[in-house]
Length: 173
Image 1 (cartoon, helix red, strand yellow):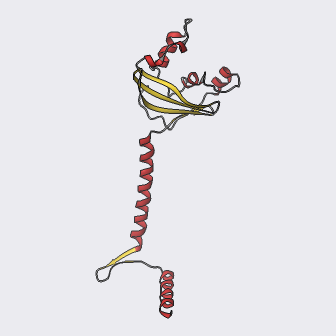
Image 2 (cartoon, helix red, strand yellow):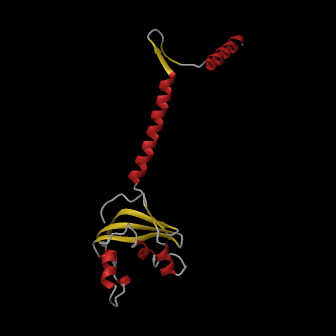
Image 3 (tube, helix red, strand yellow):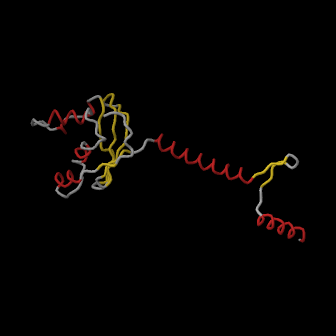
């Protein structure tokens, strides 16, 4: 699979769930098979290779240890069946070293790619910067400059009256 941005995609296959699970929903035993139908699946992954190698013989795919293979693999890393499954895509360099590449989740049969930490932080920072820019624009719209007096705040007639009343109250006390 190429490195397209897929975080905006929601995928679901009601037909697969109905036919394969006989109304019992997704389970830990079948969730990776369900996920393999999605656009998030990498057909060159170790999982896919094992599936192809064992589909027409008596060998059981589960009898092979994915950890002994090098390359991309998918694994269910968290589950709350039948509602939530978190699937992580790893790049395995050795039996003991696997680096997460992407995280996907299936919630109530809908599959999504989780956004990266970079995407989340970038989005939050852009939102914060936009809010700070808006605050400065508002402040700039209320400030005025005169060479003799310097900067001061523009006041509406109501604000001036309220300020004068407050000054009178202070002077009377």
